[in-house]
Length: 395
Image 1 (tube, rainbow, N blue to C red):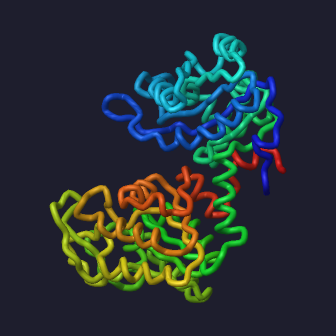
Image 2: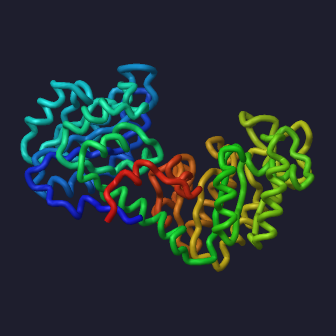
């Protein structure tokens, strides 16, 4: 259902609470090592500032703190990087709730910005505690969600706060994410091709079942492909295999045939004794030696998968084709990324590993849309309701 956005509101002299997703990687020096998610939120922050806001309170989580504050998971380095991108200092609050933070938020000058400390330093965030949500709500007059990547969680700052703070609308990044995903499934240009990779069938079982009723072609690689290959009677050696799901995989293959979905699996595989091996060799997917494991798709498979893009109008991709972080097993994923970029179809890619692979292949600027979401992206594709989206005002 379409949602109201920040563009629909009169923000003059109102304090805006903006939930962003600044859950970014930190390097060994403790500084932000990759800032794509911070950059993605800048249009919303700049839009609010040009609309005469009284101030902006910006909130995010970082990592997975264990039961309380952890210095290594402070948002201090995020505040520094955000300030560098904006060309001004961005103060970091000592906490995300409490009287001191409320006073700091209340004293913001027109257009001023305050970044709250890590929301997950409080157990009430993930527990969606009503009192914690209400404490957050006291920091703003308007709620804006620009955290699509966290929208699949019913947490205090993504769902609970909206029971105490209205209007509750989408930011520009959230609007962009929902529009891109709607183009895939609400009325996709066909043929629609889905590419799935990653380690386990169990992680994406619901997604596969959902996609079989939506797509024209389904391409499956990565570790999850070996369970399907075993279901076809192939030897997979020491490759990742979920024995308990072989029958399920066989049922899904049968369902694909019944629905006339073109379901493609690897026809050759790069194998080695372990992911730490210095090199691999290519074998037919049905003849993996018993003492080796599949770690990437082979060159024939890249061509076989690329052929599925022929005539396609929409391509959606989640999950790498192998252990692409290791050079001997990166060619398949990077080759597929280049093929997706060259396809004339609208391409939408989601998931941190997949986005990283596209960037490593040097073709990120030729992809139709790169989603900031991982879990949220997958749950949307499964057809599940995202609490952080459902909580926003309908258009």
